[in-house]
Image (tube, rainbow, N blue to C red; front, side, top):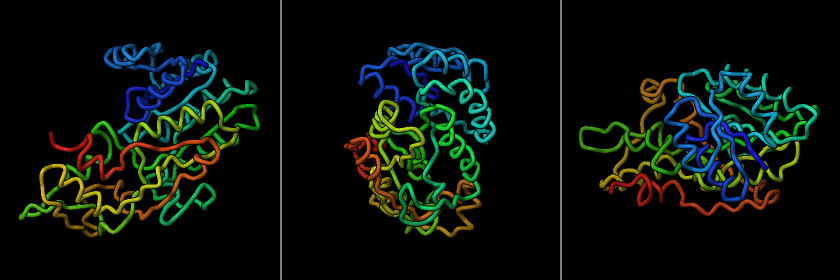
Length: 294
């Protein structure tokens, strides 16, 4: 099938693009700059000029494709508005077609605890905006859209993403790496390549209204993550935690998410789609993989 993809040069989107192409699909990828267009063309994707703030381009590209996957995310705090506008454009364009639309959420919406897809939602303020949009996507099955929501954990790979926030964190006077929170909290994680494979499986096979946690089942503590990051940078693994107040002062609203203590297994995707994560864990990636000092 031909899949229309947003965010194809990002950490998640580029992994999705690779997985789709490996499965023999063609990909039409949104590009808002010449640099992004060149990177996408180099992979074999067909470029759709435009950006996620252009509803006409989004609707036309969604109608022209056999399926759509949305992975684009910004860093300017406008994702709530942007995603709502995107759904305004795309869901009506796909209504009645039976085509797949795969939307990206995030596991932070589940709040603290051990959880699966059926656990009640309890998001921190920074991700509360996702709930009505996720519900809208899943509800689009009633309008003839094969709508699917995937909620990734903390994505790692290619030396990119949130793990660098730990790796490049401040240090004490004696060189210990300062971590978000007490460092006893667990983070749910997934390697980008494994996550890309999940999206490819979902767009091809998932039922309308489906919801999957994109997590590998590896749930290290922040202390374990920090120790691996320090060793990967050439240190001896010395780390210290920090108070919630200190973390908030340093990281702002993001602290509310990084202080969550979360554990999840991703079993639903394994059972339903045959997904089998095989990539390195986050601690392996930090200590000896893509984040490690060369």
